[in-house]
Length: 295
Ligand code: NDP
Image (cartoon, rainbow, N blue to C red; front, side):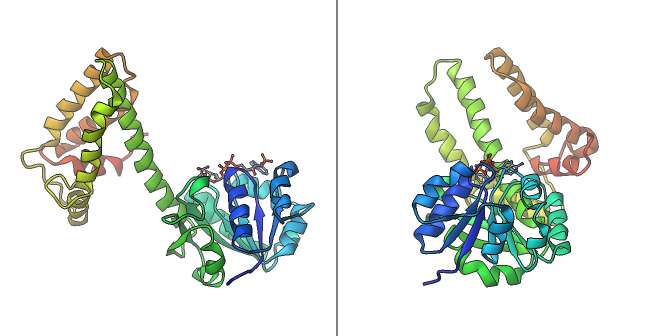
């Protein structure tokens, strides 16, 4: 078994669970957190608490970071940059692709290397089957430390550009957030007529599984084909017709006493796409409007 030592910086819900997961897998773990008391339960399980960020860096080559944002990394390690030489930073915090790219350059300037990651599970999923992380940056780092990192989740390497981990992470999160929020909107509308959430669940579940299917409603594959071909045929489902339907959704939401901001954003996107000349196209033509942002 692989028992390489690892340092974990950041002991929020994610970092603390990562440190615990490494410990349970038999890795010696050094931890550091701005608020030191959060290390107590981990020290009780055998972790070593570093007194300073410099000490945490000195302890091991592999440094796993999980904090609110990348600024927290600069705040934590910025005063210990001389200790960065030769270190492999694996930052699993959320931020923007541009911030990740800048962080890769910052690490290099200090003789360290950065592997960026977007971890696709909440704390209880860490170390569990099905958990995975999008990684990007120098592939050699993943080859070198992948076995240790696999204690947290499966590793999925996306490419050399350190921004890619976050692009894939945010692409996935946006789909997750919009799908779950639109489900809440649906339940609020139905609830206005006294319909219980359970009554809609089978239809919602059917809709999502159809989207991912190979059937006639298998829109993930249909839209992928259309975007790859650069053609957005509307056929009998023109975007103009769907924009009128989106108008009705906004009005129906208002009538139901439900906030209209979310459906309005959708309605506006549809009509802007129609006005760009895609009224006879399909729903995939909204991509053309998205690629020409107005704000
Ligand atoms: P938080 O995002 O709240 O991160 C808390 C950690 O960041 C603590 O260790 C905190 O230190 C530290 N921190 C924040 N600001 C600073 C700073 N300026 N200087 C030093 N340390 C700082 O909690 P999570 O653990 O939930 O998330 C960590 C990261 O993982 C985030 O980027 C999040 O987006 C991402 N993520 C979270 C998931 C989740 O379900 N929770 C799922 C997937 C990714 P202190 O204890 O001293 O406040």
